[in-house]
Image 1 (cartoon, each protein chain N blue to C red):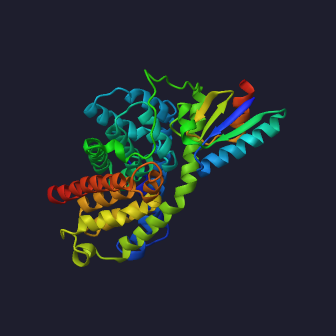
Image 2: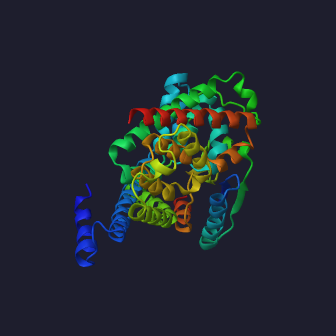
Image 3: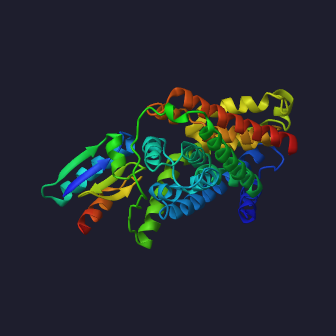
Length: 78
Length: 320
C-alpha cells in the first residue's frame, strides 16, 4: 500500500504521521509512507482541511487526527 | 432549565454546609459549584451535537456547495457554514488556497474565515451557559452579520487578488465531493472522541475562569466596574476589542470573567465586542495567513472585522 499523509506541518499533522507509522508496524508487510507538506501538492488532492490520510491515491480522511486503531481499521478494509 | 441543579447546590451550600446565602463566601462557593457544573453539562452537550452534525459536513463539502455561488448569497452561505464546520488555524492555508482553486471569490472565503472561529461551538456553549439563550442568539446573529459584511467588503477591495502571494491554478469545471463513508456508530464515536478531547483541553480554564469570577461575584461590590472603570465611557468598547485580540486560546477561561464583569456594571455591548474580538481576531491565525497573504490584506481584514465588532458594541451599549 502507498500511504500519504497530507499536512503543512502543524502538530496534528505530525501526530497523524506517527500514528500511521505505528498502525503500519502493527499490520506488518512492506508499505510506502510519504509525508506531503507542499501546499500546492496538497490541494491537488482536493483536500482543504488538514491533516488528511490518502491510501493508494484515494482520500480516506480529512481534517482529523485519526488514532492508531482507526487507521488500522481503515487500512484493513483495503 | 437548570432549576433542578440550582436546588441541589442551594441545599448543599446553604443547607448541608450551613453557609449564609448573603455572605461573600456563601455566594462565591454557590456561584462556583453551580456555574462550573452547568457550563460543563452545556459544553459536553453542545460540542457533541455540533461535532456529530459535522461528520456530515466537512470543509471539502462546503467548498463544493460554495462553488459558483454569486457574491452576496455566497457570503451569507459561507458565514452560515462557518457555524458548523470546525476551524483550526493550521488549516487556514489549505482552506484559502483550496477555495481559490475552486474559483470561490476571496470575499466569500473571508466570510467563512471570519464566521468559523467566531461561531465556534465552545464560544456558543459558554455564552449559552453564562448569558442564556437571548444573548447567545444576538451574538450568533451579529457574528454572522459581521462575517457576511466583513467578507463582502474585503471582496470589494480594489485589486484584492494582488495581495495573494501564491498563485493558484483554478480547477476547470465542477469539483467533485470526496466521498468518505461512515456508519452511524462511527459518527457517534467520532463526535464523542472529539468532545472528550476538547473537554480535556479546556475544563481547567473554565474552572479557573469561573473561580476568579466567583471571587469577584462574592467579594467585589456591584457597580464596581461602572464606578471605577467607566462602564459607559466611549472608550470602553475599543479597549474591550484591543484586550480581546491576544486572548484567543483562552475563550473558555475568559468568558466567565466577562459574565461576572457585566454583573458588576460592564455594559453588554462592551462585553459582546470583547467576546467577538477574543474569538474572531486571532494573532496565531494572522501569523499563519502571512505565509500566503500580503500583510496589507491581513491588516485590512483585522481593521474591517474590528470595525464591525466596534459597531456591534456601540449599538448594544446604546440599545440595551
